[in-house]
Structure formats: C-alpha cells, structure tokens
Image (cartoon, rainbow, N blue to C red; front, side, top):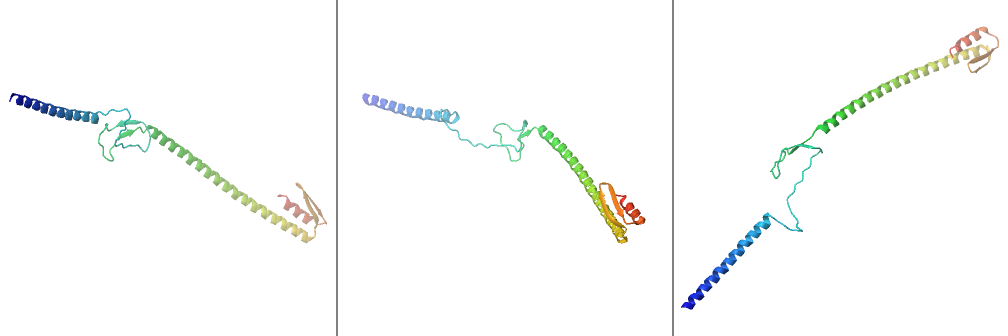
Length: 180
C-alpha cells in the first residue's frame, strides 16, 4: 500500500499542480486582457472613437469656456463665449459706412433735383426763344406784305436791311431785332 499512497500522492500533487497552472494561466490571461483594454499599446494601431465635432457659426477668440473635458451637454446649452469686440467694431464701421452712403445718396438727390430744375429752365428758355422766333417771323412777314423790305440778311451781330422806302417799316424791324 505504500507504493499506492505514494502514487496517489503524486497523482494528487500532479492534479493540484495542473489546476494551479490552469488557474494561473486564467488569472494571467485576465490580467493581460485588463491591461490591454485599459492601457493599449502598439506601434501601428488605429483608434476608433465617437468623435463629434463642433464649430461656431462665427470665428473668434474664446473668452469663457463653460464645459470641461468629457462633460455631457444638452442641446442648446452654452458651451463657450466668443469675444464680441471685433464684431462690435465691424458693426460700428458698417453703421458709419451706411450713414456716409445715405449722405451721398441725399447729395445725389439734390443734384438730380437741381438738374431737373435746370432742365425746366432750359425748356422755358426754349419756349421763350421759340416765341421770339415766331414774333420775329410775324414782324418780317408783316413788313414783306407791306412791301417795304427788298432784302434782309445778317452777318454776326450786324443787321443789314435795305428798304424800298418806308421809314415806319424800318423802325418796326429794328425794334423787333434789337432783342436778338
């Protein structure tokens, strides 16, 4: 029986040793799995992550940050504040430019009104000249009908009239053309 006990002891020791090796291997596998999941390390790895990019509608310097890294946020929650100074300057410049342009528009309106007035004056002068021409033409026709004028022509500002006789016709003609 002595040899059976020895063999039994050896078998038991072998079983315990095998079980210990299996338990040690499982524990070592769990430790390796834990370390590789929590502290990954490799030379050519790729990291996959949920990345949500955010971008403001305007650019500028951030003056206050209202969130911390990995903080959960809700839609509409204020994340940061952008310095408004550059935009305030741009707004004031735009308002100034607008006022300048409105002044220029008003000046152009005045110029247009002045030119419309000048056109009205020119039209009145045209009508006056047309009436003078009609009046002079009527006076000439009257003299021609009276038979007192043989020849009528002008050179520059000098008026030459040759009459067949009538001094009254000559006086009317000279009075008529004095305004030219």
